[in-house]
Length: 301
Image 1: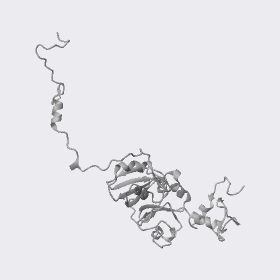
Image 2: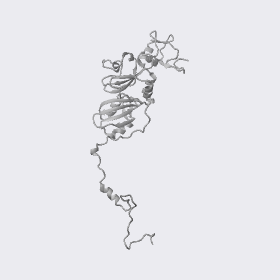
Image 3: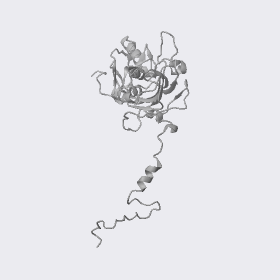
């Protein structure tokens, strides 16, 4: 039985190499195809190969071992790319962290003009959990538009807008103000929020990711990072308790000075004047009088 089809537990070779700090999974696949990887003295070129407990893996003749799993939470500022190498030599998120963490892989992306929470990790399983659609891990964004948003267009965001690479949907939409919305996604299309609003003829002026799963970090300033502990890693992998999917949200209420005036007092007076209505003092209702000669109640003889 081949190693690639073995049901025994193991780690995919490209994931193992990435966790050793040799680059992204795609880069590690190139190393495998080029015949630069050995397992127990034999060159391996099959991408489906698994590394089993006790195996010795070599890269260019040098033994490599998986690093201890590390996950960073970075507050990405505007003006930085989510990439390790940029042909135009623009600033990247790796310029914000020490060299010893440059082997970590960013989980998903935030575009050049967007800011907010970004994870970097050498954990292949965490990366897969956060990026694969079947796990549907939520990411929450604060979105500022170029003009007030029409609440009547909200169902289009929730039901889905067709983009060139698929139907993009928001899980929920809430108003913070006329121009500022909170949008929750579980998908990860490229520049998804900007493209969705562009389809509705709005331009996104500012976009910040403020939550991943259940994890927020309001104390983290732009450009700062910290290492996550096990409890925090569990939070990024789990969504908040389910809530009813929002319908068309109401825009912010008008100021108190514009609120509807109270009902006139005479309406209350008219109600109190109805026959049988309780008196102001809370006593029994007033008895009805009958005109002389009128028809008497059958109970009175």
